[in-house]
Amino acid sequence: MAEAVHKLRCAHCRSEIAVPESYQHGDHVKCGSCGMRHKVSRGEGTPRLVIADVGPLRDALQANKALTDRLEAELRHARGSFGLGVNGFGIALIYTFVQIFYKDHPIDSALAWEAAGVAIFSGLALEAANFFFLAKRQRLRRLSDEIDEATTEGRTLQQKIREASRL
Ligand SMILES: [Zn+2]
Image 1 (cartoon, rainbow, N blue to C red):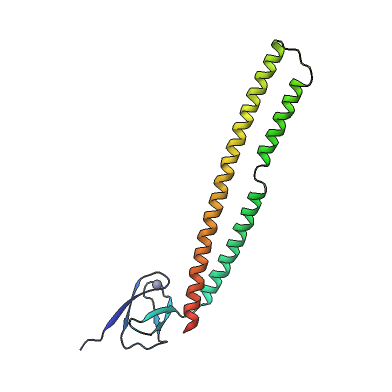
Image 2: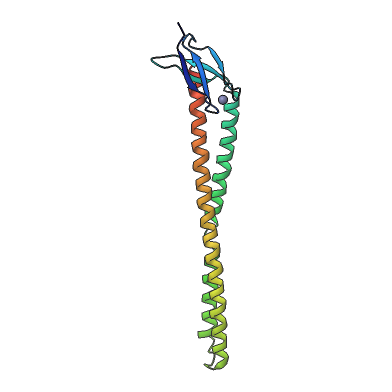
């Protein structure tokens, strides 16, 4: 009579690993695809596979923690400098209006040219500010996404380490 075989998944590369019914709790099984070593965890029902050597997992978790810390520092820094450029342009605009309205400039063609110049300059400045504002927002969003990703990855690693440590 053929022995029952459980088809389980490698905890690392998700390849299928055949585990015969006779395998006991704590027995070692190696993944045929990636070579990752597992221990068999037998409880109620279908046995499960947990990673046997948590050393590489701990290393990965540490690297993950370092990455998360670096990304969070980068995000804080990016948030800290947020809006400085826009404030600068606001001040430049106020300065320009003061020049025109409080310096008693006669209303003539020279002023018209000056006003046009200011309009073009401030228009360009606002366009530039808008560009940097958008670029900054995209950067903030990208950093947040990367942090989410790294945090999820870290949680997965921690869970694998916890499962492996139970055996
Ligand atoms: Zn594998």
